[in-house]
Length: 229
Image (tube, rainbow, N blue to C red; front, side, top):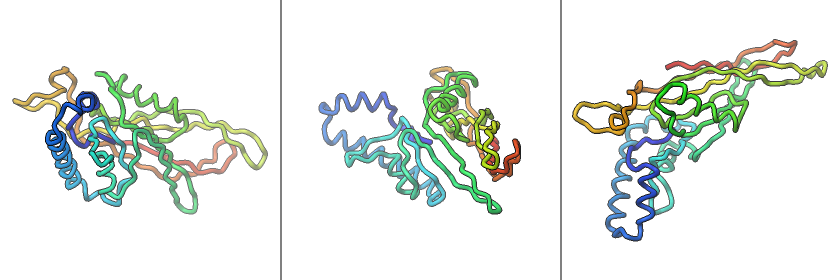
């Protein structure tokens, strides 16, 4: 979900790029070497996820290398996963006992969520204005983790009699968490400087099963998804 390395933020990269012509080539190369070392160090930590990762979302702490790739792209390549860019719509096809359903996921690295739980989840809810009927909405960025269930109404057609049927669809709004401590004795940090609240470390867990749904006289299959922290 982005920001595996805490190297240079979007604002810092903008400062560097605006003064790129003022930097010596050796300075630019050294900065790139540091970013590459950080990226390779992270890859060694997560290489066990190779061939088990759907994709890699880019964050605002990525590093753009001189060969036109960035640090998040390199991580995706190392994990044999897709590089998903800034915003991704992912469809996973699930099969269980002959029934097939689509599990639709919208993922974005995220933007500042604010200091309160309400603000942080409202940012995730903004994704529903773009893709209104997905199953799962994911954001990282603000280091918080949580799963908030919401619902929407969808309209389906009963092909037996042509009647329209209105059904309620569960959607999960998620902040995916972090492993970076904000408050550490005798260490400066952005979190302490801004008087932000400490966050629960770790990630969320989502489980989905194929569920038979016969409401409204229709026999269909749905993705029954639950989240845990």
